[in-house]
Image (tube, rainbow, N blue to C red; front, side, top):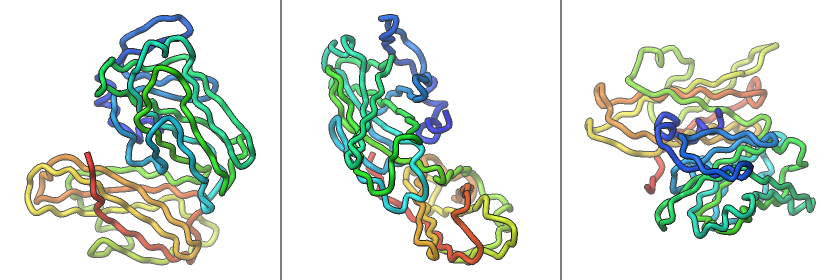
Length: 287
């Protein structure tokens, strides 16, 4: 559930009903968004028309291929798959929807046959997004491997396919934002501007568990805004980098400011003496 919450506004999508077909009972039901668990794989269906920005690899159509990065930072533990599709025909009810992961380098293949599928309306503009959280710890996926994923079922028009990799040392970022508070005065490395550089303090017998960032965003007026910001953390010593995106929509309420508090969980990636650089930047956003 945490993986799904990181991509969507659950309060919003949980209030919207959609139609689900159950292949085991051959029945259709209208329900709010539910999380399905099947053979260790977690998935859900929501009304969306594009792959979220956090997915690293994207492709048009029912198949996508990519190479696992050389500096992934640990063994690949999960693949998050995101499939945006519309309905072509009633053939979808004849065969279980199947999704496949293929390690092209090692010639290994794994398949997932879902017992459920979300049913979009039979119009060209109605789409459903299928999010799949797939554990792959035992799949021998290693840095540099060429991987392909495919959604192979009749009756669907796949608009977009997205995949993101999660390693066992992947950084988890939590966001809190609202009116500015005095708490940002207590951090050890204050700076003015969108960049900051520091050296991890010497702490014998300890390791860095969390890195807390606070950014104060200023606006020229108090009008409605909609923009995408990026936090980039670079360990210059080890030549590793982590990026997190956050979309802001709303109206700044106090002095045209927003306080963005982001807490990053680390598990050994930052060590004593490492040179760290942080950058904050605004991205172009296409709705």
